Image (tube, rainbow, N blue to C red; front, side, top):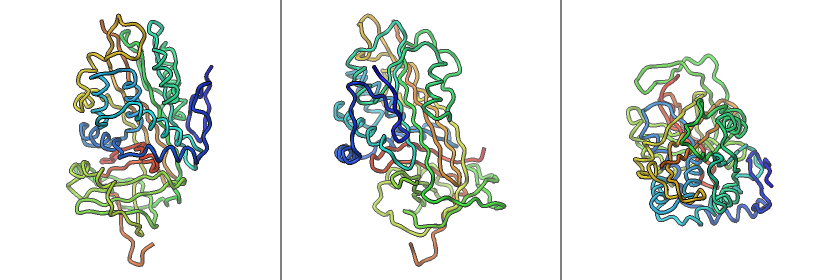
Length: 390
């Protein structure tokens, strides 16, 4: 018997053998043991690097969770290829699963922003998930097991778990060879700690990556923010109402947009961050991107699993399986009140035979990168670039 509950905006499936109820103090204590250098940001940078320059939005955390659900259903070289792509060197599966469990438990706590994480695995009638695999998905990922009958049910599930922001993942029915799907949905809604002010009638324009100028709607706030700068960039961290979650905007200097991308992990971990009065002016943003991550993941080390996957996922040994596609879709809206963002990752498996000095000016009137992170877990919930006005 299973049922769904929503705690603090996070959808968790609770079974009769679930993790139980934890206090915020217990969850925080467990979390402290699980913190490590965040590799999700490095993954995001590499994924963006392999796409065309321009506007992007994706959820490294969603991609990470989906691929870890796959890793738990395979072994040997197939498993190690996934860890390589995720920058997890010599990872211990049980230890990583414990961290995932602790992260998801902590993210489920009530807070002043909404963070929704939902996981599910879907199988056609002719295949059956192994019981140990189901147990791992339910207990570690708080996941739901469902029958794969068609795309309508999947799209409805996605729409529900993203609060209607993403109303479909698949346009067409899946091919007959697809026997299973592993799906993560990640949702974020947060108001700024203090709202921005819309600058009505501003004549300032945004400079696109190609040098052309475009009219945008600007918003502005002058306040004390965490800030850092280098020879090629400025960066500012904008807190949301819960004071744990923030958006960091990294503004490269003119002509070094691509060069700064690789430096973002170092920028985020820099010891030079300090509190300064900053006059922040940024555009309102709406982005919607969809990706097939196959080629990028192959480049990152998942070389053979798209042809053959060692099976610890399904009952029976008479069939061979492989990953068919890794599909990712993400949407974000940023305005003067706050941010709403949603992402879905689906892996299809196929059967094969305060300052006294003047404020620092931070005007994002040229291409920039942005990311939303939950600081206690180190989870990079969303990462993107804004390079041209649509």
